[in-house]
Image 1 (cartoon, one colour):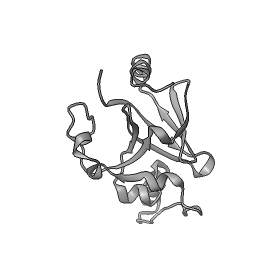
Image 2 (cartoon, rainbow, N blue to C red):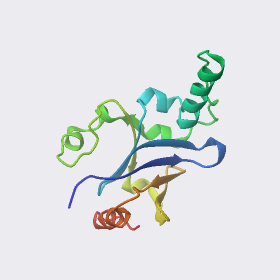
Image 3 (cartoon, rainbow, N blue to C red):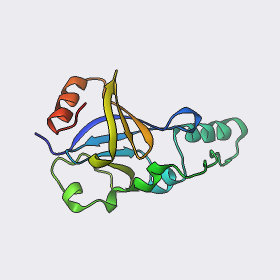
Length: 159
């Protein structure tokens, strides 16, 4: 059995208009879930998501100017941000392990410790996790979903 398993790439944190939509790696281990959007730490901490990137691109395309587009931060700061770190800040026992799937060094990662998970369930093609007062909808890969769910269960997760 693998120690770390990459299970998907579609990440939604929160709900409604304040939800963050990212593509990135979702890595399960027996101890934690590592949610790693394809962003640097600074961009994730600023609240950037795929919608802000698209809006900025459209403004450049339509008006020819580089207008910073950002969604104003909601008050208070979302709880998931306090669990946000850079992959480089993880211990070498994690990042140097042969099964660790993330090769890029500079990227954000939200660490969801197993003890922090209130609920976890499979809903269609997603694993829905409630932790840190947020809902994480983690999309499974299109092919091999049943193998991924089986491996997650073998790691001790009650999905």
